[in-house]
Amino acid sequence: MSKDFYTSSILPFSAIIIKICRAYTNSQEDFEDYYQEVCLQVWRSRKSFREESKWSTWIYRISLNVCLTLLKKKKNSEVHLAADYTLMDISEENPAFADEALNQLYKAIRQLSEVDRAVILLYLEEKTYQDIADIIGTNTNNIGVRIKRIKERLKKLLNGKVN
Image (cartoon, rainbow, N blue to C red; front, top):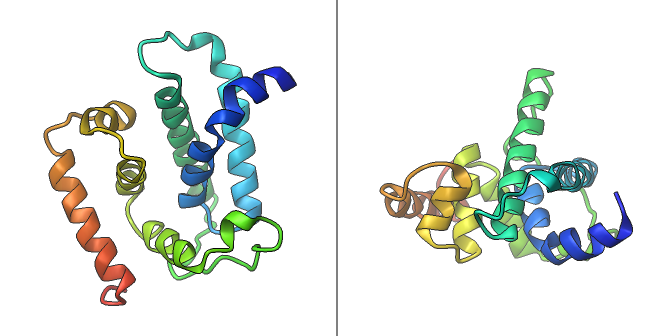
């Protein structure tokens, strides 16, 4: 991967990749592996970008697909992480993990189904229902209802009312 491609085509969208990778990982090591794999896949797939959507939408889609694929591989290798697994203390290594409230939100998000994680991350990015549907590969009809249910579940998780 060239430094120019990374600087111009990945780095400006790194926040997207970070948020998605963080929602699907429980440790700094996994996070770094997922992030690197997403970047590599973006680079490998760059010539197949057809400009039918925005580059950021395409980055979201690749990030989600890579994370879901890696998560399935991990499950298939019978490495199961407990839902209450807490992030190791990585705040010194990466300031993005230093905010405890944000860590709690990500912990709750990781307890959602894989698809619900994607939906709420996109919602938090203020994507339109149509954008969310396009990125996760569904229709817009149920996005609003799904978001409402996800928000209710997150609220219960954050208030300690759900295991």
